[in-house]
Structures are given as structure tokens and as C-alpha cells.
Length: 412
Image (cartoon, rainbow, N blue to C red; front, side):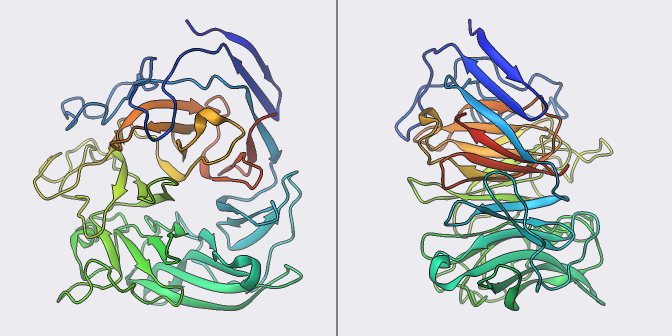
């Protein structure tokens, strides 16, 4: 039995200390499963839907044995959406209304950085994901995704610009890619961006939610419901899976996605991983492979918010990829990162995902076969919608919430 030695809590700091016990280590060679009951015990939205393989949902629970704390650094952010670490240890983040800001590890906020283009700040739209050029130290280039407004509708776009030496503005902001077609809606923009190991930019998009746009997730002629791979100039990467294929966009990397809210590169294998909102139930975690079809809206483990079945209510179909993991009921997974730090050694190579409706940070342990073998919920008592999470230069995790908090999660 696992008994807490001490739990120290205040308005801003939570310190956890748990008796050590034997559990599956998190390195790539691990094959042992978690030892506790699954963390999810609520009624399923679709109890008649059966997983395709063991541990595809409700994997065994795990518990961190090391002492760590979750500390609130500031509560003064305004709907932050994405956060990443600067080389000097500070953090740079986006706020949905269109602000780009820098924050210290102590929680001191800069004034908004000027020079960004206008955003469509409605519903799920606004200033979204952010990524720094791998050569940021020398070129100071910043890349971001946003919902771009036009008279014809709006869409997910990617822009880039140079952070000025005084850090007060972005110089030469330029839109380099637009995930057309435009659509007059306020939902499912996707909007995560990150760099792969080859220095290419990965972008996620949503299928814009509505019944009329859903089929575009399956269309290779559309930028909706996709994972996209482009150069830093916004051009398709040579060798993309649909390059040279008739009636297919060469920038597409994978398709059949609903609303991809998380992207991360595995630190050992270099594999690309994503998570996406399902409908009611059926949120997914996927390992993304070039050219693969991830099924939406043909297959899903979720149902409509009305309670009706989605389409033909199919969960598995030949030629369509199964999620590595899914959540039922929904937790609304958002930003995610793999842990590579040394502060909490047992977290090494684990995946950490901020959840919105779940109001916790999910820690997932993967085995060498890319299966989830353990799940833990961190900061589940904070009643916060965790929008994004990143690793800082100090080896701690930093997470932002819709309610405006910035957390540091690591050794005290």
C-alpha cells in the first residue's frame, strides 16, 4: 500500500512525498506495467466500444516516488496558449488575444511584444502555438501559429519574425503558410508548431469541427485535419509522403485528424507524436507516421455531444491507424512534451500532457513497443485547465493554464 508521508499545500505550492516502491522505470527498455488501478474510474461514454488491444485505454496506474512540487509562479497571464523555453532559461509564451510575452523562472512578466499580425480572437481562435528556430541564439527567429482573419473566413496560419535585441518587438513578421480553405467558424484550429530533428517545421491543423468541414480531414486536397511538414520558408519538405501525387497537397505529412492540440518528438527514437480532441470520449494519442491516415471521421472511439453515434459508429477499419491510446470519457488533451531532464530521474522519456476538461497533467509511461504501460495524474487538485507544458533549461516542467497560471513542476 502506498501511503503519503507528507503533503504540504498552500495557495501556490504543492509538495508531494511518497514512500518508495517498486515500479516500472521509464527508460526505453522498460516492459513492466504500472502497479496501481487505472486512474480513470468514471463511467465510459461508449461502454460498448471495445479497444483494439490491451492498454489502449485505462492503462494501469503509476505513482511518482520522488519528492516534487508544483509551484505557481504567476497568476497574471491572460488565456495563455503555448510556452517554450529560451536558451537563457526564461520562457516565451503566447496569449490567445494576440500577445507574445517573456516570463522569468521567478514569474516576472514582460510587457507584450509588439509587431505580430492580427489574430481571429474568437472561440478557439487566437494566437496559438510557438516554436523557436533551432539556431535562435544566432538568428533570434520565432515561429508561431495563429487563426488568421479575412473577409472570406479564417484559417490556421504560420508566421515568422525576428525578436529584436531589446525584446520589445518582432521584426519583419511574415506569414509563411496558410492551411486553406478558409472557413467562417471559430472552432478546431489545431495550431501546435515544433521543429523536427532535420530543422523542418511541423504544424497541426483541425478540421474546423462542423459537419460540413469534417470530410476534409480525409481529403488530400485540403489543409484541414492534417499534420503538415514545411520548411522555414513555408514550402513543402522534399520527400514528404504525397509529393508528386496528383490531387494531393505536397505539404501534408499525415491526415484523418480531428483537432490536433499536442505535438512532441520522442527524445530517443525521434518519432513524432500527437494528441487530438475526440468528440465526446475518444480523445487520442498517436505516433505519427508519414502518409498514414488516422481515421477521423470514419473511425472513432467517441460519440457526438448529443449522444448520437458518429457516422457508422466504427472503431476499427483496415487501412486506418489505431490510436496508441485513447481516453473515455474525454480529458481534452492539449500541449505535451517528453521529459529529458535530471531533476526527477524516474520521469525520463515519459510523456507529459496538459488536459483541459481533465484538469490535470497526465504522465504516460511508454514501453519499447510504443504502448502505454502506466498513467498518472499530476496536480489534479488544482481545478485548472492545463493548456500547454514544456521543459525548462533547468530540467523542471513549466505549464500554463487557461485561467492564467504558470506552474513550475520539479524538485523543490
